[in-house]
Length: 173
Ligand code: IMP
Ligand code: MG
Image (cartoon, rainbow, N blue to C red; front, side, top):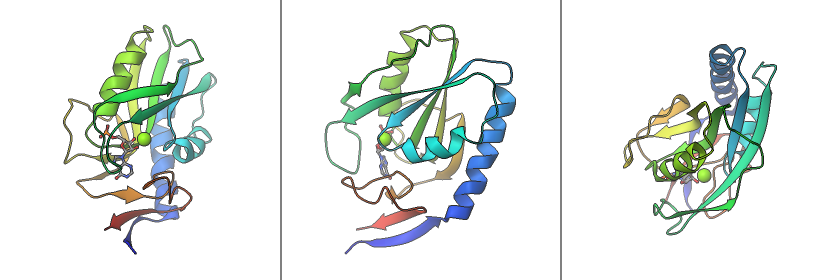
């Protein structure tokens, strides 16, 4: 059995998500914001985040990105298995990700989203994991930053398991 080492408790997550939501509310006051959740991993984080953002114009859409390759890292060969439904032209877009690792997934998604000519595109991630970053990606809003390690829980999976855990753990193989 792999070992689960606690990284963030449910209470710590709540406090961090609230702080980021407050910052987003302040930064986007008066704008038309479209949050784009990246499935599957971001669904738990997005559900908590949207309920704490106080804006008059806030829409939600989803993209689903799948990466070929092994289960613990992105190959950089990304394909979209679900595309956008909302028109994001001239809108402020905020991508909501579970975790940013190499940044290859986001590089691909930024290119796709920019093709619709949004007014702005920024990135919000539950976890910014920076040690293996390969692409020039800056996370604009990160709830938590880690150097390394494979994390699970709160939407994050290992081979599709553990998404249901309310806290975030480091999975030690
Ligand atoms: P990137 O393209 O390397 O930035 O990888 C991003 C995607 O890889 C994330 O959206 C996750 O689906 C997955 N991923 C990367 N690191 C982890 C991790 O520590 N736990 C779970 N999934 C991860
Ligand atoms: Mg993901």
